[in-house]
Amino acid sequence: MRVVVFGAGAIGSLFGASLAHGGHEVLLIGRPDHVAAVRAHGLRITGSLVDTVELPAATTVPADFAPDAVLLTSKTFDLAAAASLLAIEVPKPVPTLLPQNGLGVEDEVATALAAGGWTHTERWIVRAVNSVPATLLGPGEVRAAGTGELLLGRPASPNAVATRTLARLLRGREFKLRYVDDLPREIWRKAILNAAINPVTALHGVVNGRLREEPYHTESLALLQEAVTVARAEGVKFRDKEIRADLERVLTATAENRSSMLQDLDRGRRTEVQAISGEVLRRGLAHDLDLPATRRAVEAVRSFSGRPAASRGQSS
Ligand code: KPL
Image 1 (cartoon, rainbow, N blue to C red):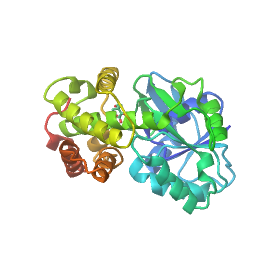
Image 2 (cartoon, helix red, strand yellow):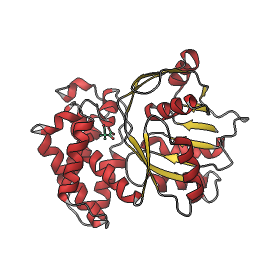
Image 3 (cartoon, rainbow, N blue to C red):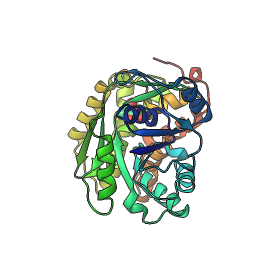
């Protein structure tokens, strides 16, 4: 298949490399420095997946590259703009994977694609929950930090055909692909875990595993509890025991990871705090819920964005 990875950062590049290895024709669309490095030296993958992969990279989709599928892997703060651009560059709708963290991602993309001219966007968009860890070490270089899985909703109308197409493409790779019956619940589960982990790691400059220790653990549990309360208000129920066990499992499985939010702050970039904790807060307000820990976390992460790592204190 011909695949465009649109917004190829860490995870998009990793998926792209894996698909190219599997014999697919893959075009990476990304930031100019990343694209230039991939063109010059190939895409270097370190860690548990593949090695150096030669594959074409560009900043726009060439007119003659008509893809069969798109992996739209931009960060959430770039997503609406990326989707608008995608609709212009790939005018014929194709199955499009959205593996981002956060809540409300698919609505934002559907609106942007529809405004750009795609029709029946609900048939093409396939939301996924991703736990395959990847770190962009620098232009042209990605670290695969262990194994993880990609969850898709079990194929059902209206996007069953697109879901099957993407599942065929992505199954049998170095990561696991799994269908789930209740994808919205899995999206919430991931958002709750990200809301509990990412801001604490980002604000204290610590790897995920440190959140098993105090005072980080208490901070993290307060955020977890507030996000669970919002999910419940939205009709998505998690038992305290279940979600706490999930938190411990992820902290252990990703103990050495620098969370994506910490990586963004380290690079002086914007973070995805709005799509994760900001969205929890927004939805909580709509249900008249008071979320002091989440509010503080959102404000603090925003105030740190663009500041050097040293100003956050400890780093490990
Ligand atoms: O999804 C993640 C992220 O960093 O965004 C976790 C699960 C926290 C792993 O680092």
